[in-house]
Image 1 (tube, rainbow, N blue to C red):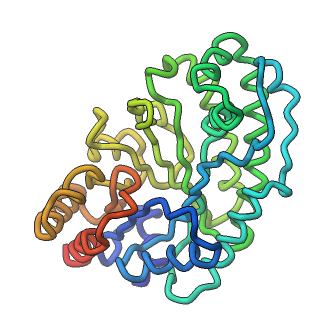
Image 2 (tube, rainbow, N blue to C red):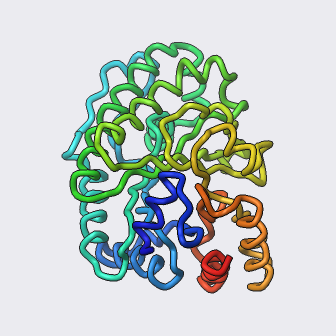
Length: 320
């Protein structure tokens, strides 16, 4: 099997020739657009990963650039630049260049931050605080929902374009499921609808996939609640197995989909020997089996990691 065939087997819950792997990290901000595209392809080719996750190293912060929210009702009147947004143009061109470069030969998945996370960035980028955002959510949740819906509609348009130019789907970073943020009932009413709106765009096209990453906000010390994402239209789920109460095996039963993960991005990948990485990779694959599983980390790995560590895991997967 080639990389595309291997990933299709995983998405369709069939057994591939061997378990595919995927790792990613944030690239230096001083790279040119072409250098950034080449770096993505180099990682795929040199490490032996089976997909290319297109990193959004601006973390979606430019989607609402120039917008200042002083009171919750301001969200009802926001105006977004749509496809004139520099962030959209950058990501679209980055995807195109990755697809054009030889050596990748893999499915490409642009990163898509959740509308709610982008809403929180709006406060930070305007010199306000995350605390202010949370206070507005409690003060006037209906206005927040309206603004996040506007964000979601814009992101849906962008996703359609990413898919039309050749992306195989999106890598969706779902956030704000942390109990430190909202209880489950509030989350279901306030956050979940915008997640489903965005993820639904991929499902409007045949043969496209959603990789759902359930991300804890480490900058605040928050850990996610993966079970809240049960029933989401994801084709492959990933979460922090080592810092939540949901194991890979349990997650497979909860989500009833293929699973990505198994390796601690703060543990063995950084601290173990190459042989320990190989052994842990084979142990995880032995526990999960080859069907409906992709080996990877809980989240992004540090940009400074020695690629030999990632390659050790990829080689172990090919041998297992």
